Image 1: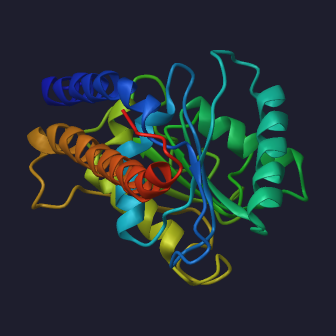
Image 2: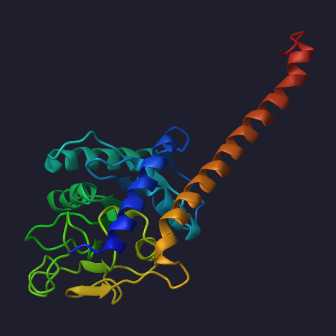
Length: 276
């Protein structure tokens, strides 16, 4: 049963997602900076009715950890995740070819996580270093070794897996790790501070997955939001942070255009052309 508190935060998360949609026209969907502290590109795959702007708060959290290279894989509403996984693989290959990166990290929400996981399972030569799934549907097959699967305990769409019978259970686990977020719903996974922290830590840690931290049988733990972030305010903080990051990007773009026009003005005057 979903509590009133969880329902209110879920509705708030949907409101943040809706208000963020106009930002898709001003936020770049792909960029690559080889000098970033963590140069591995992160491919963001939204859910069935989602949008790349759903990941703006997560992008801000990752950027604070030195992860600044992002690319978005978008698709129209459809359920054939097997075919979409093929398209995702082609998009990853094209990204690696364009940037020179040998591999990528992937973050997928809901159906996007299922698409990414299926790509790993069907292609043994995939280029995915690490995978983070947020409320992604799961089946009886074990989780991939490099996956961090985050579930919400109050998710009515994709319930958290059973600790003994789920795909991360000891008798089937290959090293996949599961984190459960209490008092959180399906859409709330995109903005919950515990999810942002877990995702950034998983992708930015320097150790290999074969080590103790992210391997072993059925690694499961319960994540809690930081105490300094009141649960009732985290969606408002996410929305403000989203628009703050977008405003900074717009200021940089406008400043670049003004600087270019300023440097062009002397040349126009020398050629006899007076700018309007």
